[in-house]
Amino acid sequence: MIRAALALFLTQFGPQWAEAACRQALALGLDVSGSVDAREYRLQLGGVAEALDDPRLRDALLARPGHHVDLMVYEWSGSSDQRVILPWTPLHDAAALDDAITLLRSTERRAASPGTALGDAMQFGARQVAARPDCRKHTLDISGDGISNFGPRPRDIGDSLQNPPQGPQGLTINGLVIGAKDAGLGDNTQTELGALASYYRTEVILGPGAFVEIAEGFEDYARAMTRKLLRELDGRAYAHLPPARDQ
Image (cartoon, rainbow, N blue to C red; front, side, top):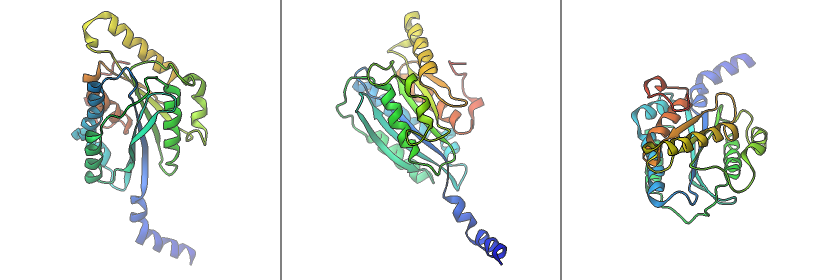
């Protein structure tokens, strides 16, 4: 009798139940500290929007109906200066994705403190991801163009971010480091970018398979973000992209 009732339930409601499944909670933390000027701010926000609108990424996000991705985007700078731009949004379909892209493209910059509180940004993002316990995979992305100079050091708080309530078990933190203006013009800027990438690998990234992506300046941010997101979404189309700088 019980087995028959369960079979009937799965037959009638199984597909609808599956549609509620969140396959991944993905939070993007964007650096808006004092080193980021107005032009770079627009390149960063526009770069996220451009990445989400890339046909390869749209396919990766929407190709599994009934198993959606939850997306949120926030800005960070000083120790107590974080702002959610895009609240958690289930990307069930193209319309939801288009709405998220439109919101990002229309977001105006606000005044932000000049500090680079990377540890606080990680703690904030981890708490946001922990608020999606029903998602099967939890990923936090941190973009930045410098090392932490305020608040807790990332290396000191990393382990706690994989333990509730600080963060969800199994949390992965990936990094996207951004080079200085005209980063491709000289050896010194390339050396600085390499040092920043090494810092992120040592201090920031967390979890199995965590990685660092590199943008050679804010002009390269959209390309780097596209590549990183494709790599995170089960590696779809990853093999067709140019090699990563951190390999």
